[in-house]
Length: 276
Image 1 (cartoon, rainbow, N blue to C red):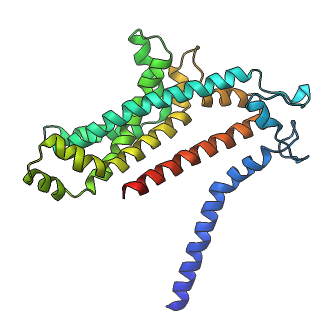
Image 2: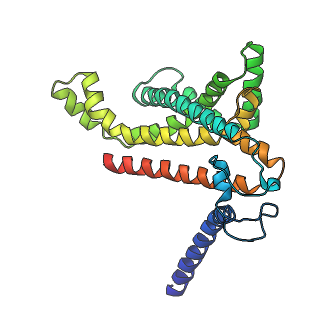
Image 3: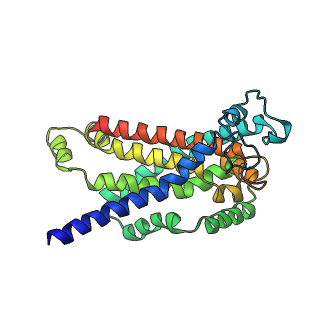
């Protein structure tokens, strides 16, 4: 039995190591090659440089004219700004509505409750391309001009579901006896929610909001269908660059996005730990 237990433990450790290697080695390669000075063949290492980060950030560089792939740094800055504005707007709307829906479905019993809960999962299960085409058809038939507002509306349709699931999981683990104790001590419903329910629910709200923000910043397929011609987000900008091949600036942008995601995730974990 000890031999089988040792083999099982060794197999589990090996599987775990291979799993994390499969996920993180490609990311590590992107980070390494973002400092490769070779502008033509990314896989051939010719030296260390920070030129590509300098180009992305808009600083003057000494690279040759053939290596300059970003046509306009202003376009990149505008794409980043658009993504941040959209992510901030959709995160705010999705967090408020997703939290309200989660509380309503958890606390109140009404006709169609189970059906409504099932409907909340549909945007997550639906393929992105199907949802993007459906939103495009809807906006065109409704006579709505495609642009920033259609992106915000379109992303909210599925980001609300993510916030709803995270907050619902937090609600399921809450102790409702504290609410009953608050009511027994004379607190009204608003005071109970503000003093008892909301502090317990805050880690779930923060987690759902951060998840919605990251997904919004990363979304390409749905945004591509409903963005129109006047608005370009960062994923759309990167996708346009990829059509001409994998350039070193793309690696630099990818590393910066990974760093930003890591900072946001770390901030979320820190805030959750402060709430315990």
